[in-house]
Length: 65
Image (cartoon, rainbow, N blue to C red):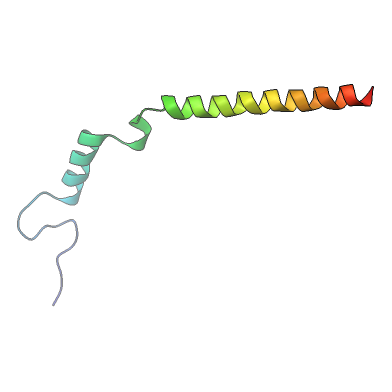
């Protein structure tokens, strides 16, 4: 006994491509999602890391005097 191919629905329903298109139309792709919060978190991390590095270098320079 063979099973129907995944893209050929046995009951005449939508094909896999049609379902995929419906999902893309409804939800978009991951590239379409908002990125504002993620960008803010990354920028904050970079700024704080840069400030911490600068303070560490300053502390080392002042300690060497």
